[in-house]
Structures are given as structure tokens and as C-alpha cells.
Length: 85
Image (cartoon, rainbow, N blue to C red):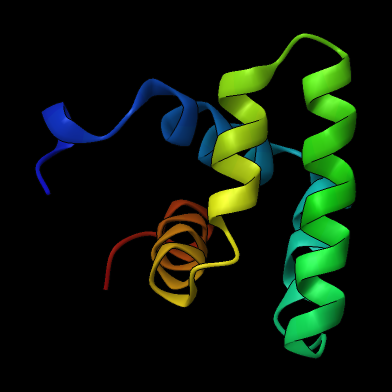
């Protein structure tokens, strides 16, 4: 997927996670949670975002339940924090 194909909501999510220490720590804890607990955490946040009128962002958050998406976002955050290898 090229940069032009990446939805703006993912770009925003990565930027926010990369810049906010507390959110980044929260995101990192998702990796160690059992799958059912991670699904629950992301579902709760997604519902809150939907209620706040942030349906697009809510969908992006929910998509983090897909391991491929979670790893991609994690890697981008890692590279943003530490520079490219």
C-alpha cells in the first residue's frame, strides 16, 4: 500500500500515538493483552468515538484488532520515534 492509499484516519492515529506518551503506552499495552481483552478494549474505545461523532476514527480503532494492521501501526510508530533503520 502506497502512502497515497493510506486513509487519512490512519495517518492521524499514527501521528497522535507517536506524539503522545500516555497514548503510546496505552497502545503498547495492547500487544501484551490476550486477544479477547484487546478486542474488548478497542471495542469500548470505538463505541466511545462513535458516540462522540467520530465514526471514521472509531472504525480505524476497531481495525487494530487485525494483527496485520496492529503490527503496521506499531512499526510506523517505532520508526517515527527512533528513525528509520
